[in-house]
View (tube, rainbow, N blue to C red):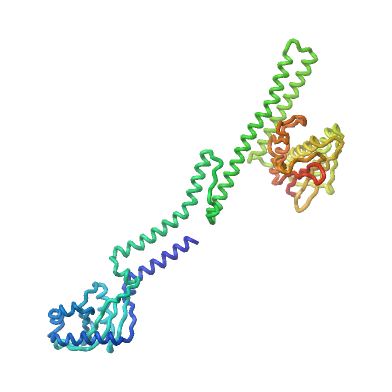
Length: 455
């Protein structure tokens, strides 16, 4: 819109100035009846010329120069016999003299009248004799109420060219500055971001408009995502190092105790078994970290095939029931239909297994876990509800963060690596779905998984 406005303004200004620089605008004339005082001045000048008793026009302009110079009017004489012959005594610029001369030579005026130009008014004619020749007498004077056209005409030619050039330059400079300011802000923010300052943002977005505002918003969203990714990477590295430190320390202690000569064979056997458990835990943790890393990789692609979701979930429940039996937990499954869809069976198995295993782990003994599967609005919804204590509302979104634990001391009473729900989230994201948790109305926590349904 601004570009269009500047273009239109430039076109109008160019047209206006070109008109003022052309002869056409100068020769525009309005003819009207002469006023009494204008006729009085015309007759007065005619009487002075008659009293001078000049033999010809040259004699008049030579001998009466002092009289003509004192008069506020310019004298114009048009030959009656030769209409193209116009003689003037006028200090006007040559260009304006040529305009008035052409006007008088081309017009056929017989009665006194006033002709108004943008710069001059001319009154006449009166027929009079100078010597043996008959002439039409006209008088002219400059119009004192100068308009913009007169001002432009009075300027030197180089000023008339330079003025619109400077005006257009200033307008374009302001326009370019308004366009480049947000780009400079984005460039400055980009430089800071490239130097590692992930807190930088493009300021003053509300003052921008159109595509530049969208660009600034996109940049801020990118910077926000990069900051989150960097924070997640640092947190993941810190959590992995912390999680590895504990089993490594226990492994070293168990090996040290097993190597002591005073250790009995039975105790040594217990220490070696402890080493084996810690090695198994390290192996499981590394496997989970690698699985999470693969899922978070944008190059990870889901290998879609026709999967019977109902049978898949029933198989997972049968496997988890063995662990649940130790706590006398009953896992119930409710699926009104036999549902099949296109999905990655391995990723889906990993996601559901991790969620169900987490529910078994944190459910109290002799409780019930309800698994519900249904289709609604071309979407498969799986809900896994336990009977545990639930979690604080403000921590619901943090449950799917790697190594996140409600117990800040990282109590290992329940075991695990803290990666199960994070792996489940990435597996569901690979299916273009969503996973979230909410506290039940009565007691416990529900994890809801939604994926698109493809027949």
